[in-house]
Image (cartoon, rainbow, N blue to C red; front, side):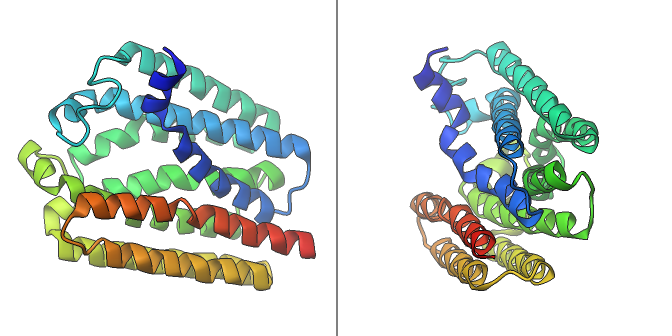
Length: 280
């Protein structure tokens, strides 16, 4: 596998989007050690790689049948399914090893993360709640970052996880609008396929609103200062833009705009939380 083909499979830019989730957990836990930051980075990158590799392998047949995804690496024959699975397994081993080096609780819960990474792709085959399963998988990032520092699971960790769960679920509902007709034809499940665009966007908007409330609750609990709240306002504006853009007639072009904007949300929140931490 050359780097270009591997990049088409794994989409490394999405790992950069997800890293701030884990870093937020570290910052909220007041973590400072370089070793912790490096191990969290390694664990998150490994988890993201495993998730993408397993997803592409599991969905290979569906991707080949979908006009939107037929040019992905596996349908085009650039990478074989066994290669993707092997990469996923190797990445899971790195995730577990990194978690072991962090603390006992991280090590035990890494197996839960591995389970989520391997099964979430199957959910759309039988449940429209698949968006929330993906959100739960992504929620492991801030929870894991928090546990890496504290070694304990508490209300703050769960609040951070809930914020990311709802954010990603809301985003994935918008993303699924592109495949509404295909999913219906193939018997796949999603909120857009089950309830249509209008209701799907209402659910997505509610998820975004609840995510913002959870992030605000986490900020209040830890006495976050102005930089964090400014970042949260920016996140709210980005979410509002996404909801407005998703109502455009050409959902394919709208989704591209939404994903470009969404790439700024997690770095903005991370910058706000980091600035707050440095100014204390």
